[in-house]
Image (cartoon, rainbow, N blue to C red; front, side):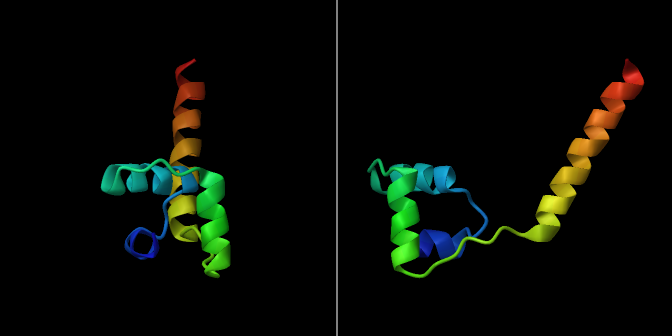
Length: 69
């Protein structure tokens, strides 16, 4: 699990669950992943720049929809 988090630090808990299922063939709940990360003092901090970029794209898409109507 730690290797997956280090390789993909910006994933969500659901995405980590999917990765574990794909890689190890086990189903793990997001609650279990959250507890594991807390026990190992691992904090998931999303990339702020990526979030801003994503929000900008969402806003631009919404603006285009408003202009078309």
